[in-house]
Length: 315
Image (cartoon, rainbow, N blue to C red; front, side, top):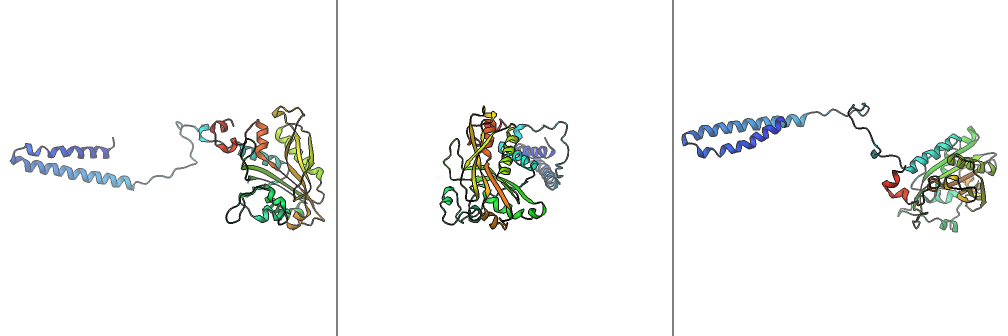
């Protein structure tokens, strides 16, 4: 018990002394009452002094760089860990960095120009309706694909064409679509966009780049194939597939579509201020969530956004 608590208890007990006054002879009551009052005033003064001292005491700032005390409890996994998607996004970015690409992060709120106009979607084109986009009342768009960053990547690194002879950028980011959620569809997920421009860029370089990424990510040699696709911002456009990786028991007997790719449309280069008569480019984009699901054999994409601790603790 602290000194302050002791004094407050004594003050409380002092109240019982007043009850004794009526039991005393009349000649003794005055002197006894004066004695109890003096003690009460002393206690009140000391309590007030201690309370003022405590309230004015300065608290030393915490030194966050100080080492742990010997008896301090160490951090445990209950303190928290990185989300598996965050871990894999970092891994994806590092693979591309080692391949010579700059990495920038996508926006989570964008506009009509970057979502459609800069990507060669003509006004009223039915392809605009192919994206189930959310929209705010102010007209902004939570991006439905990381391709909204192509214009920014091309204009931001345009000077690299003169300095280094190429633009090489990848853009991981979160995207949003008005989807019916089930085991293979989510309204919120991640993609990674890639953009490369040079005077000699070819479709062969595109396929080799993406093939190298998947082989590095899954740690094994993979066969690839493509089939025709359509995107307003690339021409030709392709759907990129890899053979089923060994992580899912694949034996080269199945194919998995991993995303879309193609040579950047001349109109997209023109809009970004790059002469398509001099420079060529290629771009690609695919989902990160599915990439991770294949790697770890996860059968329900909803686990990533569920906040289920049982699932997260597995990582």
